[in-house]
Length: 236
Image (tube, rainbow, N blue to C red; front, side):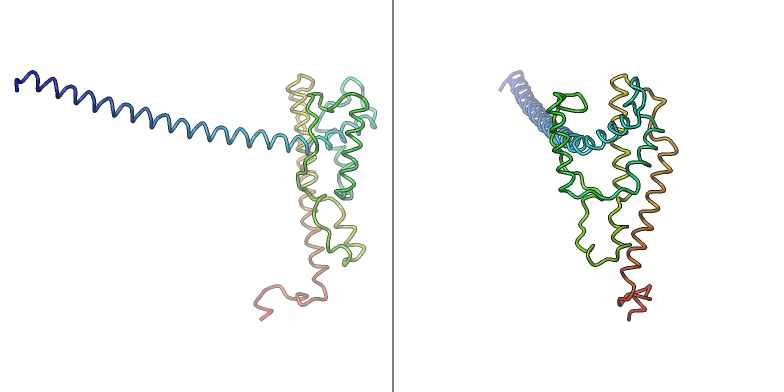
């Protein structure tokens, strides 16, 4: 076989092998891109659903804040504008030390708010046209109270008060409202609501919540087999 023909056939073989390798590389690249796209899609869906749940949970708390602002008689110019001082006073007057709301009561409140919005034509208190129905984001208001009937009146009164997690949710909800106002240009950076007073209020709520739980545990353990024992070794 003449040498030029052999060289030509070798080139064809090399080209075919190279073409096959390139196709494989392209295919693998497409698969990797498909995997990445699937991850992005999943994350975006999770984010979208979480935002919807969060907004539905925040909406009633933001409405409470706005109603409180109206009751206090703040100037019409900035009545609903969120500030750190407003948030601090709102938490003190309307949230701290408040009794937990039962699911039935909260459902009625949600229905009342929805009816109010439909009657005034607003459809949505945030003004974005999304009339999301309320979804439950678990907090202290929804904790089971099966053992309440066995507690003393003092213990029942303590357990019926909301805890730190609910207070923290109110702070998050009003902060979200502030961020919406900031984006819309109706609030300013200087009004950032998580001021030191609010941070200290949350810190105090956490400490009191832990103290309440500890006291309730100690009171319920009194007179039982665990009374007077602090370690498992002493029970042996």
